[in-house]
Image 1 (cartoon, helix red, strand yellow):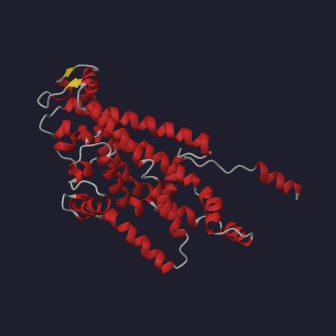
Image 2 (cartoon, helix red, strand yellow):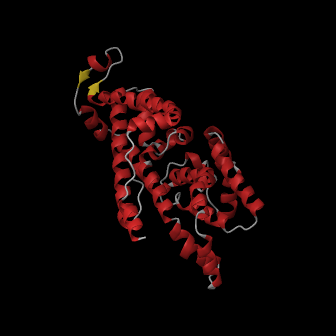
Image 3 (cartoon, helix red, strand yellow):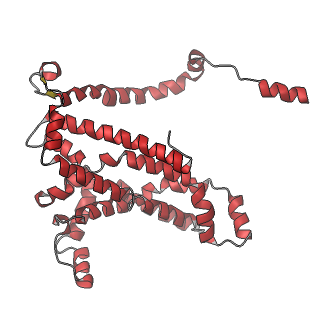
Length: 318
């Protein structure tokens, strides 16, 4: 018996080479091939366009014929009038999304886990997923109708709380637009964002719940003492992803929502990059510099938040 244990302890599985693994699992590699081609063609090859950020790019001259200007585009970017405002809006909206917008899906998932009627639980889940599949144009149109000068929500706020009867989307005061944008995102994504948490809660051991119930713990005590600690790795993973995507905040909805009166509070780095490339005052070099800055900061935030998560909670995304 002792010899068998010793043999099992020193046993090492044979090393499988890449060629052997390919011969054995070639159908899996074949299925993965379209995804590789997609990533290379649409994500890696276009990265060569980064050189535009360091050139006075002209379409007629191309990448290799345009004048090399070094860091001039970045100096123009940071000393301009519009980019600092877009950067401020991006940071503020990102902070609101990662605080006010991050918590509701967790609360919703916890509330769903406390519903014992399975049919009603599935109905609530399905109903909460629907707004995520509504087109941004439709969502923004609904918000415009409800928050317009004669919209139902505007009239309710005016009659019940004495607020000014106005078009709230045209309000240029801080932080009205930011809160409207984050609130719209919560309504649209609360159900879809709760999927990961619902799946994590489903993996929590039922024995722990039963033992706590036998010891006299009520639902709320079991939620805070068992469920939330058990799903904390998933919460931290989603938080890291949210922080990493902070500088990608705002494109479709903001492009559809903002207007000349709200440019100073609605413009973000993402929309600024888009306007520089495809707007009336086209400047591809400035747009490339803005996009490169956005990517670098997003990568730093992703790595930094992952390190903090590993140190604070003992779990990380990578």
